[in-house]
Image (cartoon, rainbow, N blue to C red; front, side, top):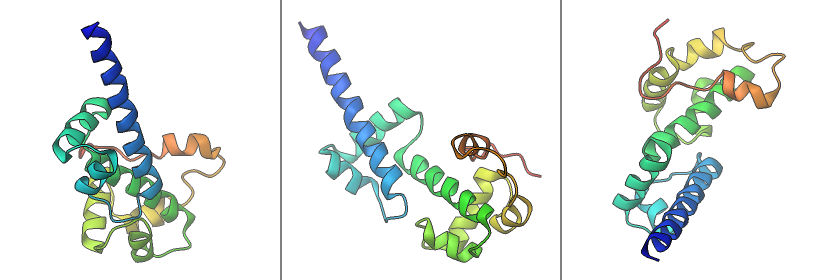
Length: 144
C-alpha cells in the first residue's frame, strides 16, 4: 500500500513538473523566475528545482535559457530582425547577457550566427529543423 502511494505521488510530481516545463515553453519571453514558477506549481523553489533537475537533467533556469536561445536562433536565421531586436524579443533584458549565453550554447556570437547560418534550415521541414539547429547545453559548443 505504501509503495502504491509513493508511486502515485511520484507520478503527480512529474505531472506538476511537466506543467512547469510547458509554462516555460509558452512564456519563455516573459520575465520568469524560480519563485514565481514554484508559486504557480504550489511547490517550494528548492523542491521545484530539485525535481525539475531530476526529471529533465537541468535546472529550470538552464531550460529557460535554452528555450530562449532556440527561439533566438530561429529569428536570427530569418534575418529580418537585428541582434538587439532578437535579444529583447526572446526575453533578455541585456544584450551582453544574451550575447554571452548565445555564444556559450551555440559556439559563435549572435551576429556571426545571423550572418553565417541564415540558410542553415532551408529545405528542412520545421519539425526537423528544430532538432538539427538545437543549441548545445552546458557550454559544450565547440568554438569555430
